[in-house]
Image (cartoon, rainbow, N blue to C red; front, side, top):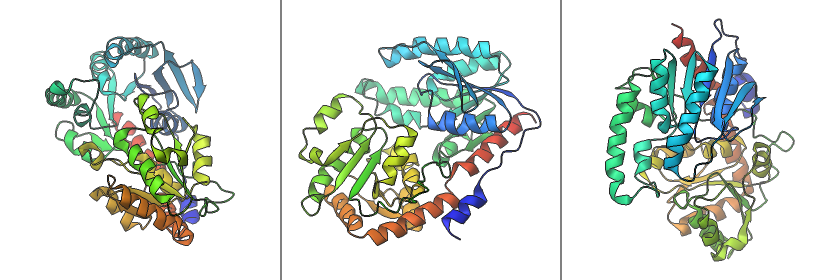
Length: 392
């Protein structure tokens, strides 16, 4: 069966819920157009017939995607100030919504979730990342106290999770950490929405001789930006190629640093991209890069960008982590490499850029895999089931 037929078969028809609920998603960190929170989770719940609000800092009040966006003021100069001040504003706004169910997305909101439980509300904790592992690499935390903070937070997070009505995790690895403490723990993967990033006119295949490799997402040192740029310098010694780069640098000083690399002249940096711009950028690219460093939290992650490349029909060059290799190699949709080996990265880029037909076939394979397995439509069914179970 072709990926087009599978897409048509797997399109989700939302069933109206028997008992609609008033639902409030809350964040102190994410944006008003966060893809996982708003476009996927909130919109899916709204389409199913629930009354959905989303409390978020620094946004104007509005209705979008069928979701009521509730903005709160916030101008923190430091993460600690955000934790102390923004969370307080978020809590006050959450109380004013007076929802049946609160669904929060940031670990710093755990105390807010506990307060909402005391008010008799049902509360869901959505765990996007392995936070104890994250703490170990937070640059704003003094290195000498990171390990102690990581262990302390892990104990606190697990103890608090017992009190919540459900825990949603982004990966099975994180789920296994929470399930012993909260049996109502479920993984809802952050997979792509079917058709969202597909260019229907050229099906993404016209770009298979463009010589453009693409990286979209947060631009950090640990996500391989230096290795990608240096690899492009190697590639251009053999053939013309360009790195299309979309996203924002963190920290901002990293941008000035990488612009000094000789390979920067082969970079087309486009800054932050809207979802429509992401779609257009993928449509003109030939290969997608996801070269995260072998950090413990990355090795067990499932990066959305890898599946978005696949959804758009691009072959991927990915880090050779066992979990990623299983996905990429079993579906024959790309090449896995040592992300720290610039020569190996450049060799893989040259291999794919020099074989457009192989790129086309790998792109088709990736699209088929997303249509069959790695899509939001399937995940949203699990999300609706979590909410339905809250009424039992």
